[in-house]
Image 1 (cartoon, rainbow, N blue to C red):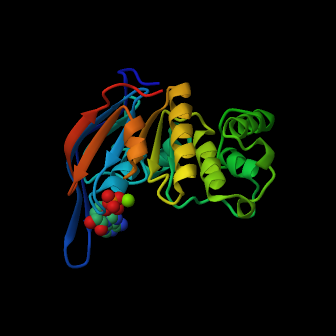
Image 2: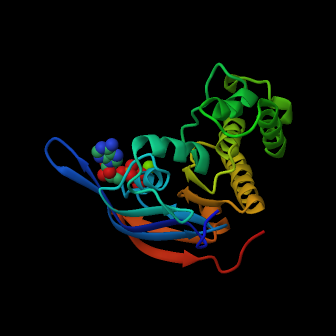
Length: 238
Ligand code: ADP
Ligand code: MG
């Protein structure tokens, strides 16, 4: 856990993608903190830098300039090897396109996390953790189903379970409800909020979904790679 009360601190973060004919400035001086236990909704037009911000916060990409701290630890200058370890143990990702392994069951898709490297727990502890998460996610009776045998909402819930397997401090959700119908979207929104608040896990949720911004502690607006506005929720919604 963080020593300073912040799950994420970004200071002066710039990201420039070098392209053949011109550079693309995806992030242009981002200053953003996420407190421990805080849920931040990140809102902005297509191409404004939302996905880039999430991938930098989670150590998938490194910034061109600026500093990134997660749980008080500066990851900016981490080697590729250290970043791989960091991603595996400290953060979680749930992407819009749910990328489950098609030939593994729901339970095995969670257990894959433990196959990628040492987690300091036994196979039976991993299995207990996976089954507990599946139960909480309402998937206990789907543990042995393949992704192809699950609905869109169920697959999204498996992806959330996988992101939580290693008890991350910070989870990035990139448009988690955009592919779901409104009823499933509602369920997933509630689930994300409950899971995060129960565990004291921080989250950044990229979304255009009013339901999520309503549930978030704060909504951050981004345009052309710059943060333009912060709105704090008037009151926390249960
Ligand atoms: P958003 O998620 O808000 O739609 P992105 O972070 O995906 O925005 O993209 C921000 C900007 O960076 C866009 O102009 C996009 O075209 C560009 N971009 C994103 N990824 C790459 C990449 N790998 N190479 C070059 N340009 C990219
Ligand atoms: Mg995006």
